[in-house]
Image 1 (tube, rainbow, N blue to C red):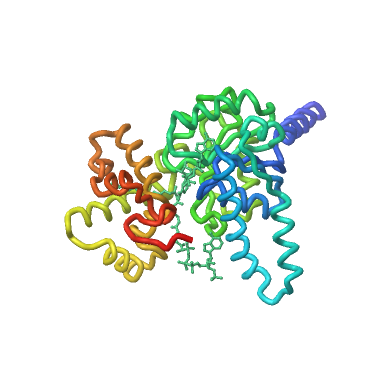
Image 2 (image 1 turned 135 degrees about the vertical axis):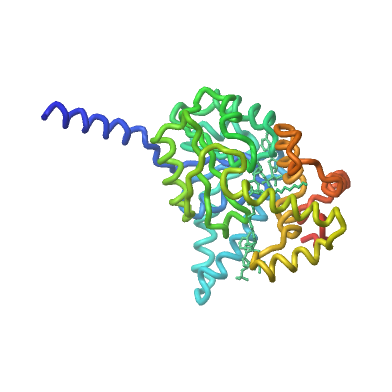
Amino acid sequence: MAFTSKLIVRALSTSAAHFNSIKTVTVIGSGLMGSGIAQVAAASGHKVIVVDKTQDIINKAESSIKKSLERIVKKKFPDDTKVGKQKYLTDVLENLSLSTDALAAVKSSDLVIEAIVENLDVKKELFSALDKAAPEKTLFASNTSSIPIKEIATATQRKDRFGGLHFFNPVPLMKLLEVIRIPETTDATYKSLEAFGKALGKTTVQCKDTPGFIVNRLLVPYMAEAIRLVERGDASPRDVDTAMKLGAGYPMGPFELLDYVGLDTTKFIIDGWSKKEPDNPLFQPSQMLNKLVKENKLGMKSGEGFYKYDKK
Ligand SMILES: CCCCCCCCCCCCCC(=O)CC(=O)SCCNC(=O)CCNC(=O)[C@H](O)C(C)(C)COP(=O)(O)OP(=O)(O)OC[C@H]1O[C@@H](n2cnc3c(N)ncnc32)[C@H](O)[C@@H]1OP(=O)(O)O
Ligand SMILES: NC(=O)C1=CN([C@@H]2O[C@H](COP(=O)(O)OP(=O)(O)OC[C@H]3O[C@@H](n4cnc5c(N)ncnc54)[C@H](O)[C@@H]3O)[C@@H](O)[C@H]2O)C=CC1
């Protein structure tokens, strides 16, 4: 009996020792998603380093984080004085640093979240380099929309400490986080990732490493069919959007959402899936989408996509 309970105590303390309470985070990629992830992690008390390729890109991310925080602070402190708002902003920004040196940034991190371009080879090259630079204890996660986590994780020697953290755009407002495990992900890693998501104030759902996880498995066919419908000439993007907002209660129509997500990212997603399943009619390329991307009409981020936007 005493022997059994000793074993149980040892098992519990071993798994507790491996549970990684995440305090320091490196976010690689400071675009739409990376800047949002860095913002919510810093706002929930984590020390965050956000990394991108150039100082210019990083500066833009900093200014978009500040704008988003200004919007949040208005709601958070409706009647508060300037002092309370300023303190909140200062506290969040103090938790945040910016860098162009990914290998140096990961050295002090409990968790690395990758949010770079949706391309398997580029993601693998990054993770392979990070794996050599990061401490043993550091957990790795990808925010990929559509690439199998297990394929990205093969670039590392730490598949047991690897998972998916799939956030939704805009990260500061969307409440969901999909937490993905591959067969090698340990329970301790999974629990650490899940606890991190909850610490950010997100509702977490668990999903296996299947194409599109939960949300995109359902969203991609819907968006693809919206594009086909317009390509067939059945309705205009504006009327499809109006129909889905007023008839189905969606906050954005599919074309507004495509522009919001980014048409480059959309094309990366569909091209990746079509390469894997070339005969699947759902994943056939769209001439309309390809033309817009070729013309650098990438949606809100470039000022034009299916719609035109004021450049801020
Ligand atoms: C044939 C080939 C086909 C290929 C098809 C392939 C398709 C592939 C698509 C797959 C996409 C994959 C992407 C992914 O992996 C997962 C995703 O993230 S999917 C996207 C999920 N997101 C949504 O669905 C967003 C839906 N929209 C909304 O919920 C709302 O519209 C939104 C909250 C964005 C904005 O609200 P709205 O009322 O519409 O506008 P306002 O501008 O008035 O904002 C309201 C309120 O919120 C504040 N706010 C807005 N943005 C921010 C921000 N970034 N930070 C802080 N605060 C923000 C704003 O200030 C307002 O505040 P008030 O105080 O209320 O004024
Ligand atoms: N846009 C969306 O709505 C969503 C996107 N995602 C996923 O998140 C990831 C990022 O998407 P977005 O933020 O939309 O893209 P984005 O294009 O806005 O940002 C990507 C950023 O990564 C940087 N980058 C590229 N390679 C890099 C490298 N090697 N090192 C450092 N930085 C690098 C780019 O300079 C850019 O700033 C993708 O995997 C995408 O599928 C997930 C959920 C929603």
